[in-house]
Image (cartoon, rainbow, N blue to C red):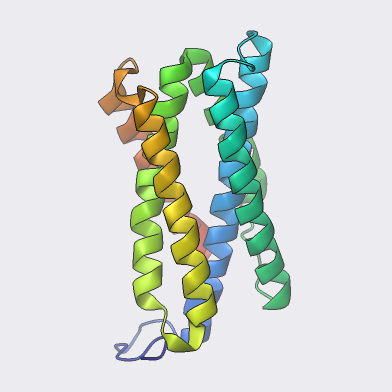
Length: 187
């Protein structure tokens, strides 16, 4: 199967689909890095950066930086225009990270769960849309999806569901993440 095979009238051309995937994934990984940077900054501010949550967040942040570097490289190699919303994701990601970490370690982990569950669905859809002609990109998306699932599982094991107003908090973050994905594919 090739990327875009069986597409309907009005569907994106294969090149457009690949460009959107790279654009939105670079934006998402950029946002994830900023969320973790915000969390780590807040944890340093309150003296909890060396605690268990701080160590776990620092490890997840390293993984997200690797993901971002990959998509930064793909943007350049494939000459894909990045989202114009990067300045917004810069501020929003950092603010979300800082706010959830200031709410407590469990809220910081709840943020990770919400983001990673949304990204799991997002990456699964992308992997299914990419054909054999984009096997390398599909493998990258699938590998990063596995990393994101591991982050979610780590956050759940760290008590994310015990965060105050867990369902409300994760629901709001998921809604914001889905909106950011939709916007970043287009703008």
